[in-house]
Image 1 (cartoon, protein in one colour):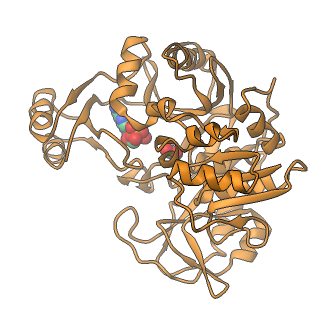
Image 2 (cartoon, rainbow, N blue to C red):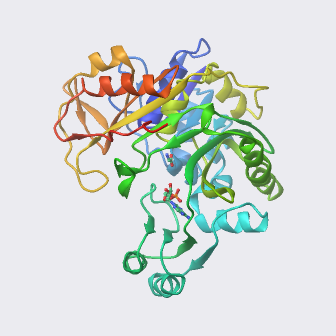
Image 3 (cartoon, rainbow, N blue to C red):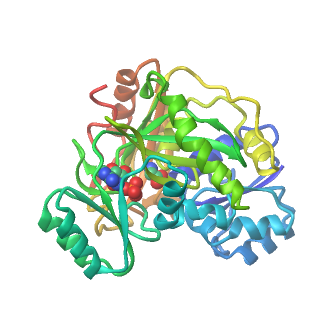
Length: 409
Ligand code: AMP
Ligand code: GLY
């Protein structure tokens, strides 16, 4: 099978590494890719990953049999639609189905219409209306810019003044939301129309600082374990959240295909939806893949072609991943620092490149989230020790990571 993988982060490196293990693979193209997998995947750097017509024409010319889309931007740009129109099965939803992620207002309206538990909210047109609303509601309160912001368009304001500032710096429509208290959980499923299969539950660490402090990021680490979901929560999430969302999308004539990601808050009042994503989570996927035993390429191809496996196979271990970031992220940071110790780390754990590039054969930093280290073991305590030991063998100027991923379980 000739496969085109779109995306250039650590999630895509992790997916690529597994696709490369499949006996079904004959050739892997990676658009645009990063410094990883030199000589194993052919990197495509002269194409815009968000131009559907360009990507589809190129993929046809290379006789690509399957496309896999990692990030949200190409999904929202309709790249999946263009590929399928060109006869190339694609793992990833249509542009219409990806609106579950692309528009918070769309997702909220759907949840209200289908009685899916989520935070109470109002839509506001801009900063003035937002400031009036947060003044009326009081703190804590959550302000979410409509549209894509890579997790950074959200302010969880704990004081009235913080809320007012966040409201006034909006540049367009937004959603003002009730603050939910509880533990967060990433619940991903493989979906095909109304049918779905759960992936192992995971938890992302979204804030930059240990102890969940500081601004939100794209995710600084994750754990994956069946133990994250106790009792009958699994059934409740399926029945009250996943099944109705998929039914809503199918009924609207925009059935969902790919990974549906529900970001949940497990509140005292039951699980509630914080957000939907239309793709694999990053960095959760780097952890989840350590437990997922199937031939990943076979599964992705089956879903892309309109099917769904009967079941998935999982290890009962626990997995953890840790992001090594550029100091300064999620604010401004410098790039171009040489990365040392990659080979030593790779002997201990999986090392996935995120924001890296090659300069004269040397991997250098090229993004905020530079690397993700991942592994699995019998317990979180064990895997935590292994991953942190590996992190200490890696070095680049201003390297930063959270010290508390997987702690406190
Ligand atoms: P989102 O991009 O909507 O997932 O929001 C990013 C992060 O902000 C989430 O992972 C939560 O940690 C936090 N958050 C979002 N909405 C709420 C809410 N209604 N109550 C409390 N925290 C929230
Ligand atoms: N880890 C959060 C996300 O992928 O959006």
